[in-house]
Amino acid sequence: MRKFRLLVCIVLCWAGFVQAQFISQRPLPPQGERGRVGEQQPLPNIKIGNRVLQLAPGAVIYDQQNRSIVHASLPPGADVYYTRDSAGNVTRVYILTDQERTRLDSERRR
Image 1 (tube, rainbow, N blue to C red):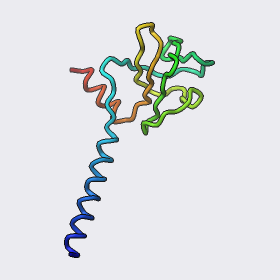
Image 2: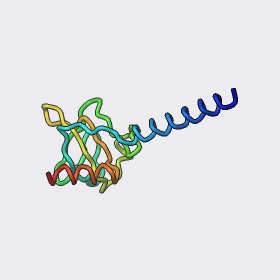
Image 3: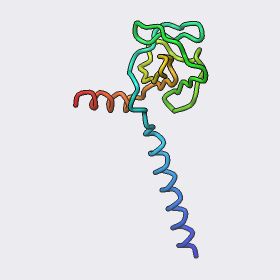
Image 4: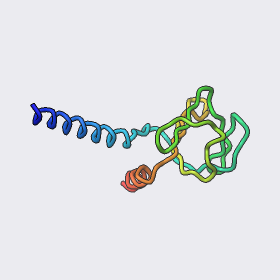
């Protein structure tokens, strides 16, 4: 019985580790664009690169841990990946991790 409990404990710990590894690899939408955030703009504007774009109603900004953050928390100079709707408004903004930057750079070279 003790060996069975130990085995169950090991399996559960391993499953948690695998799940944590999976979560750290967030999928980025294929139709996105890459840019760098400029200086803070009044809502609903956001500066990415040299362009001032508008956030769409319901737009979501994700930090590097995939948590949603408010517009005012978006750090100037952050490397981001973003999507736009058919009107050109920004719908999603992802602050990139080092791993995501490396992955996007390697995909761009292909």
